[in-house]
Every structure is written in structure tokens, then in C-alpha cells.
Figure 1 (cartoon, helix red, strand yellow):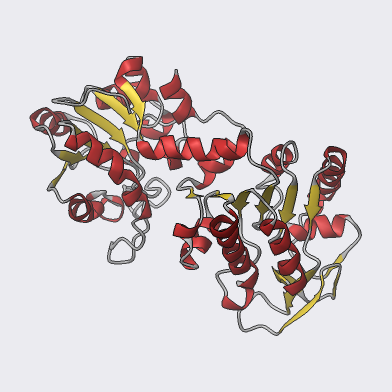
Figure 2 (tube, rainbow, N blue to C red; figure 1 turned 30 degrees about the horizontal axis):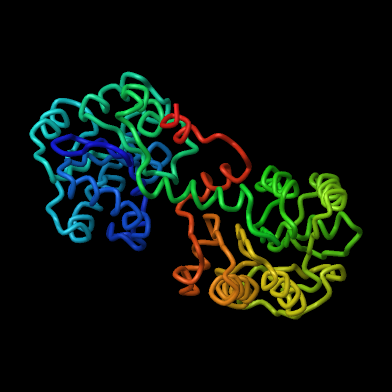
Amino acid sequence: MNLDLNGKKVLVRVDFNVPLDKDYNITDDTRIRAALPTIQHIISNGGAAILMSHLGRPSKKLKEDGSIDVERFTLKHVVDHLSKLLGVYVKFCEETVGDKAAELAASLKPTEVLILENTRFNKGEKKGEEAFAKQLAELADYYVNDAFGSAHRAHASTTTVAQFFKDEEKAFGFLMENEIKNANKVLNNPERPLTAIIGGAKVSDKILLLERLIEFVDNLLIGGGMAYTFLKAQGGQIGNSLVEEDKQELALKLIQKAKDKGVNIYLPEDSVVADAFSNEAQIKVVDSNAIEDGWMGLDIGEKARAAFSEVVKQSKSILWNGPMGVFEMSNFANGTNTIANVVAEATQEQGAFSLIGGGDSVAAINKAGLAEKVSYVSTGGGAMLEFLEGKELPGIAAIKG
């Protein structure tokens, strides 16, 4: 962030879209903590920080009268917690743009911090509206985007606003820089062997990612619900396991493409199966290609865990995106926990570079208490996915120009 901050006001797009309980207490402050280095850098160098973010999806959860539920989605919920983390009093503006916002921004002194109200309370945000973006831009001298989790959205506060600042007046925050740098370690000249571990429920969610990965990985480990579409496509009997019937042909094409490229694809040899989608269901371990009717695969089995672990241990670069099973239920969490542990082990003991690519994988690595033992944990689920797929993210393009 190469900006002369002294005496300047800096408009910072952060990602404070944090989970709240029914009493509006923050249950996971990872995203807030991730933004601290950028905010601290601004105020310690004599700048004033004007923070903006979205919180939740207010337009999808309207009150009965059709109005926005301000109490539920107000960014006021994060003010006290941010004040404690920063060790400074954080001001709050009850509007995002308007007379009050302009007045508070104008009166802000160096080293002070102001949070504007939820950007999504304004209809112009999701539309990427220029008039709304211009009002935001008028509040500050510089624009810094530190919201990687929203970089794939072409919204007013993540993208459009940047056009109202000259190239030398806008920059990435430290979190954005880190996300891009670490993703590029996997995408550009990674140390080999490079192994991608891809899980989750559906092939359709990860088609572009799988197609892209096959272009440059050495090993591709496929777990989670999506594995059963591949297994059935090859003639396996998968019982009542999750399957996307219309994606079987695609699965076979991906397997063939991997063969042509010399990429090793690993599917789970065995599965933990259950007679119902419940932690209390009857369970047993069977061959993944021989699951009886009435039973469904909900986790990878012991043989699969051992085979996957062996590949990971031999790897020098590792990307993990998606769980190996229904890890929210303790009886089906062993596969995901095994991957979390072996990725951490490869990082700590073999010096591998490991990137945990957003979403459920982040929840799993945090749950296992291993976030500090891997190289990098991404804060951006959908954004990291799109970045790895090779898409140009609007929030990044807007700063690069």
C-alpha cells in the first residue's frame, strides 16, 4: 500500500460480513481481525480511516411490511468489537452516504476511524451504481480495497467507486495483497508435486475449478458428495448417495482429460455409509463402488483416508477446497479432519506450501484448531474459487486499472 497517508482520509472497503447470534453478538471475528493490519497502518501513519462494508443480505430478508430490517443488519453490531481490537474509539454513521456521512467524514481527524452503515442498505450498491459510488468517493482522498471476500462482486463499493480515484490514489489493502500473492503461489510456478484436494457436494459448483486444475496440477483428490457422480459415471453402484445425473458425461470427460494430461485422479476407494442423512443413523464402511440401495455415502472411508494422506505427504504444494464428507456431523467428520491434519503435517514437517481455499475448508481447519499450522487460510470463499478458476475479479481489476 504505497500511499502518503499523513493527514489524508482513506475510504476502505473491508469485509465485515460476520456471523451473528440471535442477540447480535459476533460468533466469529476472523474477517474483522483480517482487516486490522490495513486499518492500523492507515491510522499509525497519520491517516483517518472511513470503513464501509456489507453485512448479510438485507434485501432477501425484509420485514413483513417490506422494509429493510435495520436492527438485524446494521453494522453498528461490529463497532464496539472493532474498537476493542484496535484500541481506539470507533465512530459510527447511521447512513452510508448523505449529509450526515459527509459531515462526519469531513470532521474526521487524523488517526480516527469511522464506520459507515451497511452498503447494501442502498439499492445502488448491488447495481454498481455510479451516483452512489461517487457519493462514497467524495468522502475521502484515497480508496483502498481490502475486501477480498467481495472482490468477485461488481458492486458500487468494491468496483465502481475506484473509477473516481486516480491510479496513484487507490491501492489494495494488506489482506487483498496477501490473498492474491498466496493464490498466485499455487497458480504460477508452484513447487511440485502440486496436489489439489477438492470436496463439497456438487460437481456443478466446481466444474470450472476442476477443468482449470487439470491443466496444471499433478494430483487431484476428489471427495465429498461430488465423488459419487464420478463413481457412478464409471459404472459404480452408489446406492442413495448424492449424484448429479446430468453431470456424469462431464465427469468422464474430466477423467479422460486428466489421463491425457498425465494428472493422477484419486476417488475414495471406500466410504462411510449411512441409512439416513443423520448423525444417529446406522453406519458402516463399504467399497465406494458397491453401496447398496437405501444407503448413502457421507464420508470417505479408512482406505481412502490412508491413500489421500499418502499423496498429500509427498506433495510440495497443496490446495484444499471443500470437505470430504458431512463434517458438521461428528460421525462423518473423520475424512475432513484427516485431511486437515495431514495438510498441516505436510506444511510443518515437509515444508510444503498449503493454501486453504475458502468456504467450508476454512471452517474445518478452524474447527480442527490447525489454522496456524498451514501456510495460508483464505477469507474469500466464492472470490477465491473464481480467482483459482482463472477469472478476473472486478474488485481486483478496478484497482489494477
